[in-house]
Length: 216
Image (cartoon, rainbow, N blue to C red):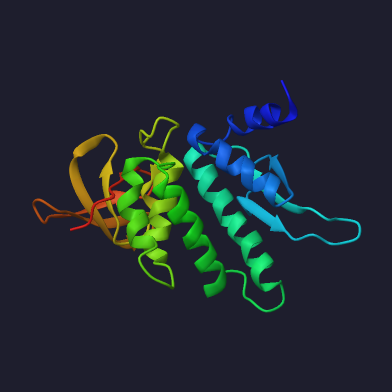
């Protein structure tokens, strides 16, 4: 096995298989040191620009405990920082300003158009990248959805109600036939509306839920 295949075999442990070749090409073309690290509570990924003469490579770190589709999303986030640095330098733009958003949007369009994400993510993706500045609410929902997606694209009910934004649609994992909207936080519980009946319920913030991607 040559070095390229060894590197790709490592990437396959963390990324959707379909995205491995494209990510590998980006890493090689941009002289990136990609390091997969243990879980960090304060960040999911990180980009560091080269600091010549001692450091000539771009450095990206990604937490290794992320599910594949979410891992790819976080990696695209950091790749966008790299592209922003290459285009604008590091002094003239804000970390997540419109320049970075534009580069992130281009990468997301590239990777979503190539089919590297699960079908359930596309409605949120389309809302997120529909214009600049990016739709922050749709972006949060997209991140939450991809945190739940297994490698085969199925959604595991690992989110808690307290993790999703107000206004989101969701189903309680133990009662998936009922669709709710989370309206208001009340200490450790949330006021929610069941959409079919219009009835109001208070639900524990620790309830496992599945995020609903469609919008009414």
